[in-house]
Image (tube, rainbow, N blue to C red; front, side, top):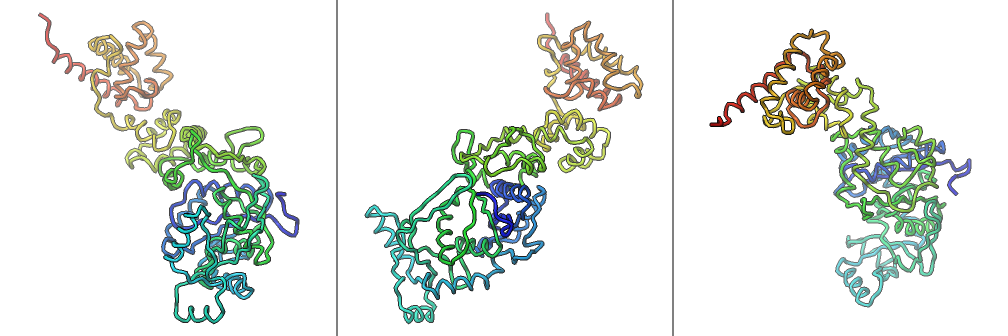
Length: 495
């Protein structure tokens, strides 16, 4: 079952904790939730789980919200826009939590635990020594109301635990993985709250999802162990169960679990490095899901149209940087040139951006070689500044530098007779190619191209000539001829 009835509309959520940067794992989960909601004409909710006061920071919350917005993953309800089931920050929902925690305590389904860390460690060590799975033994479960009251009056350190009955099968149907079952005996009386109004993760999730009428929980498979605990809490509170879909892990190309450091690289860093939001989304959607027609390049509307939880795979998605670079390169190539230039301006020196014609020519010529927008700086630098290069680079294979100098001088004479108007790639190719065919393409065009760019790899010489213009092209050829002359003057004279 993947749909709710008309009385239970589709509602999904993404609930990040603002304790660190927005990373690709969160973005992928948000994307899948967003696509499912839009496909099913449901609602996409953002909820901030900020109950860890020591680590939750507003700067991280802002980064998460701004990052999702930059991708176009706009939500229907959230902390910044509100909604009918708010507040959407857990720190603002204390009164809601208090009502449920009091209910559990009153019905003796939860209790205060005053065990110290030392006592708990001692219990844990004893169980492990006997080959048992560590779980709380229920020391404080049977304290009298008077004992509890006295301990609280003394401000004795405490938490609130759930009474977990033994022998209960906690089974649920996962839309992606089928039936998953866990016995309650393995759980023990788990801690569900720090105090009467501050729940821990599992209890807060259950309460928030119920109060916000969430119909489907789509999240990573690392939460499967939490799901059985949350099912138990739902039953203890008498709440309706929701539908679950646990997404596959993200793996390295050799199918090992992706390191936390790689997975949690800030999404913002990818943007700063010149990855386009569209390319990142396209890459991420295929980390565990595939279109029925196996099309790879997909726009957001196409993703929505094709998306189905039934096509989410059980096995891990492969995080391959080469594949991400390929996607980004495709999107860069597809950008209209004016839009590409605007995006490149963020990465280049201001004086480059001011040279409108040269920026345009350089962008047109170099976008085929760009994997990231930031690549443009290194690839196109020679258009704006001729760097130092070794004179030996001007030589073609075994052809002497003296011959290269002669060819460059001949080319210079031809180019000096051309007007600025005729200084186009097509016209210059028509002028120079007969010479290259006669004397040898490599012998003529290699030193010309190096003279113009000073690098081993670059676009073709005719395109560079047009981009640089007549005056700058002649200047660079003169520099190359002078370099060769200087080198030849240092060579020893044969007797």
